[in-house]
Length: 219
Image (tube, rainbow, N blue to C red; front, side, top):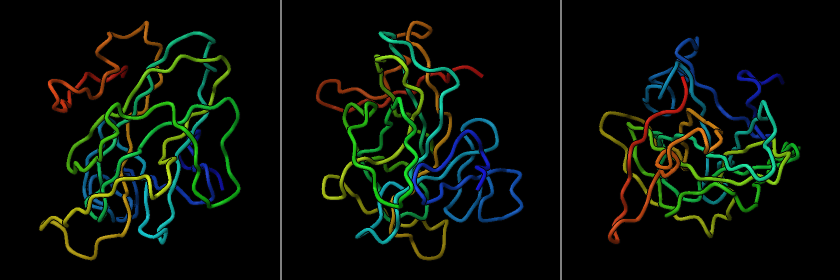
């Protein structure tokens, strides 16, 4: 199948959902769809990725793309994406990260991928915010030639923290036994083109977690 949001595609055989304000299906519309309601962070579209399924009953999905330009050896990059927990999911999780690779990650299987993602929240906290977008980011110094990125949960279920979330009164129906998030505004930018604070999505200050909003990159 040809990806509807090329060059973005599902990395395993489990498809990644695309939501759009121009969708003819109510299930995949923006802002309201089968998983709840969220406006796009920018533009009119976003993806839907599942990072955990209760007892493996709901398959995980992985969102990947090839970069337009391979990374340069020794150069430092800021890798960033934004997520919002869906309203219909029962679980919020941690271990949501990004893996950087020289080779294509496409897997002809529906299995989970177990790797060490180079980009993970400093605190690796559980993301349980609905109705808003949060950034996950980090810096990465390239070996040279890396040209693929994949967003997903690369840890085992036993190593993934899960928090149960109650369904908001604004929504009816049965919660899904998964940790499904909307994903938007993914960027890979050399840090020499950014301010230092632009690649610090969360930090520990005085023993407390501070979550800070930073300006969006580009257009």
